[in-house]
Length: 236
Image (cartoon, rainbow, N blue to C red; front, top):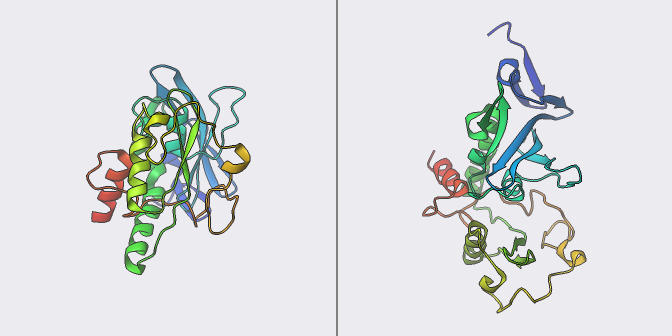
């Protein structure tokens, strides 16, 4: 359309009409930011700001309370942080405001470049036979809140972590590698920053250690949103 203005974010283009009814739109240097949120039946709405980047990255800065300092969260991490009871389906649970209504991310244009990046990554890994590295991840106990470390170096380890993340009632006694209870000490914060990245020991997450999805950590028989999306993109 010749007279339709476009908002450019690096290599990323959105038509003005696609964003004009969204709340909190802000075009920054290399990203587009919009207001977003996630609703918990127990805690209510958690508001935040979502940044969409040209490479498909999605970053959320939480504003659930005035003192919350959680930023650069993935949508899945924000979904969990908000206390959403039916987690693991962030594309449907995280919403933006369009025309005064809450609309799931899955029904907006904001995931277009995320999905494209995911497909490109999957094709590249399959064609090049690339071995993807996964950094260590943590899962919090439902009873005591302490976080336990999970290594993700094999498909079996990835499955154990995947199942723990999917279980809203996961607790320390379910930890598969050592027999521990909630009385066991949690890792010190100074130790938690070391998560196994091959590029930098104290990396907070980069393309070398954060996987967008591969055959090692996604499971075709799983019905969670992440695995379903990966399986459908592989078949596409």
